Image (tube, rainbow, N blue to C red; front, side, top):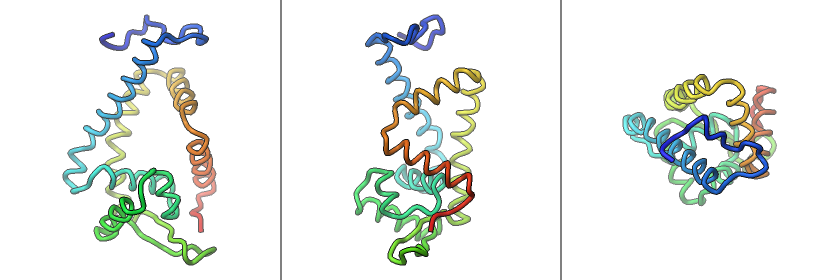
Length: 175
C-alpha cells in the first residue's frame, strides 16, 4: 500500500478488518507522530528544549495544577528523569510550583507566563496540522477519528481525559 485511498473502504462492515488494514493504520499513526515531532523540532531547538520538556509543557497546558506524582504517572517516566526535566524547566522559568491547600507536602505544577507563551507557540504548529487535516477529512471523519482514538485509550487515560474535561468546564485548578 502506497498511501490512503478512499476506495479502500477500510473497515467496511466493521466486523472484520484484515491484518493489512490494521498494519496500515499502525503505520499511519507512527508516521503522523513522527511528522508532528519533526514539525515542532525547529521551535524546540530554538528554545533549547527536548521532547521530554515539550511533553511536560503539553501536560501542564491541559492539566494545570497537577501534582508531581500525577505528572509522573501521566508521562510514564521515572522520578529521576522527571526531576531533571522539571529542574531545567523551573530554572528557565517555564514552570511554577505551589503547595496544595489540602496537603502542603504536595506540589502543584502550572505553566508560568513564559511557559504558557512557549507552549502556545509549540501548540500552534500542532493545531495548524490538525485543523488542516480535519478540514480535509470532514466532520464525519473527525468524529470517527475521535471514536477510534478513544477506543485505543486505556482506562487510566480515559479517566485522565474525563478529569481534564471536568477541570476545564469548572475553570478550576485543583488544590
